[in-house]
Image (cartoon, rainbow, N blue to C red):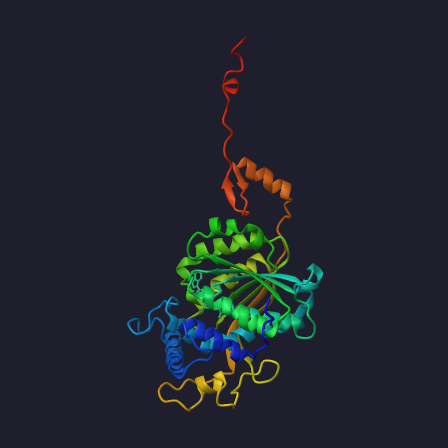
Length: 365
Ligand SMILES: C[S@@+](CC[C@H](N)C(=O)[O-])C[C@H]1O[C@@H](n2cnc3c(N)ncnc32)[C@H](O)[C@@H]1O
């Protein structure tokens, strides 16, 4: 296998942007830099004015469109990637015992992400674990997302950003196409083993995308994950803290607080990325991605490089409800006339054909 080349965060982010735009060069050409600058100004407007001017800024952002994915990633990617690191550091300072320890499981960690997008927030988690020594060796990711256009983009995040920073890390992604506003339980049941092994559930910047009218179904889907965890599950939630976002987020915070052990809750916290190890700044090389996206050298939209982010935060933990043995699970499946198929999915168990002698046991008597 070719050894992945170590690259900086912004170099890797540039590869992801090229992948989103379908670019052919190994750098973002000027025309694509212009398009990205425009798209990122638009997406920020879309978040700020969503719901106020529905004709200009629709209430749902169409991530199927390349310009929205590229704009989103350029505007928030770096800060979202770093946020998980800062979040885990806060939790560690409160109670380090609640943080899953991959070294107790052969260096393996399982993370389930709701509204995964490019799953760029995995970067901060890997950085947290492997900052000083390689505690994390194998990362299994269950990536729940309704828009499949993100799939190649997030695989570029894994290949370039994660492998470029942590070359010895094994990444095993499982893409789970599911819309949280629909009944996801049959879909989640197909990935039961993978989901049940989760150590961390990440809910980052996704509830803000879902109107509260769907809260019953969304909670039913999340409850399936919470009720079936086989290990203590650390739940990390970070969502926009604006007044407008609160109806979409607060109901979930209340539900989680009732269903779990609360570790950290904040209505709003500002994270500053202006010092190492997570400093966000201009490269001052003239060719760095931040220089080209946020510098003053190009005409047209002038986006601003932001080095802090405000989020509402929550961290809580769920202990496995009742550890059910595999024998019990198999017995219950048999009662439901179901069995595990070759790929681990639940499939209907063929009912045995009754023979003539089963149906007429007293034929000769
Ligand atoms: C703002 S992005 C966040 C991506 C990533 N978690 C981050 O923090 O950068 C929200 C993601 O949630 C997805 N999403 C929105 N509604 C969803 C739903 N009902 N079911 C599944 N995914 C959804 C969107 O497609 C999008 O990829």
